[in-house]
Length: 255
Image (tube, rainbow, N blue to C red; front, side):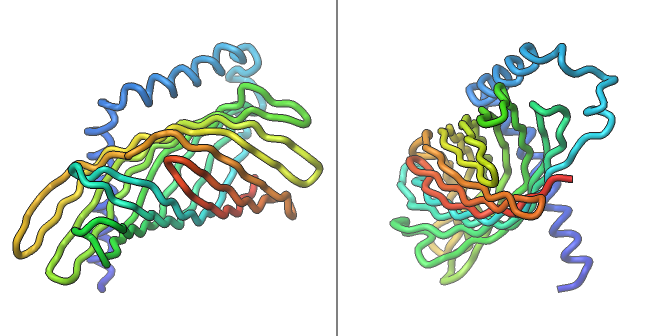
């Protein structure tokens, strides 16, 4: 594959991601009401602590990490239930605008396989994802933090085989809250999250051409995690259960 074709595919993916984000985020009222309320609470509680002359805003720390995650969840696709496995590999960063507020971006590759769903049986879809995230800390202390935040990502994958051509795209929004116990070289966390999924599946075969809506079958999950402090960075193992059943491995470092 030539460099021109690769560049065109990357440009098309980014262009489509931005267009879809602008088109679909407006109906997500409940997601944004929760996120806006969290930001307003933290800002109103700590507005006096930070201002434009604060050293923390002149020299903002940066967190960078690499992640591998595998998530199983049940999707409703046009009224049919699909046992969906989503695997992702990517990189992310957040800028620390204060010790209580971070914001950043993440992007990577995505692979999707589905069971108990005839249209994509035996088919693996692959593509990418791109998203934004924020982290808010209503409480920070020497031994315990409360970490709240949200992420919004766009995924686009496709696959073909056995006379079928499938393309799936979806917006995934997640709002979470968790407590973090801080020991000498270990961080242990437990919490919960709410997910919002809205997308579409385009299916084409010799006998059927169809577009179906993608929704999540459930919304609420529990979260648990452990992070080890190693040589100025962290190695983390995190899991979810409920609407999302996942495991994630992260390698992070602050600069």
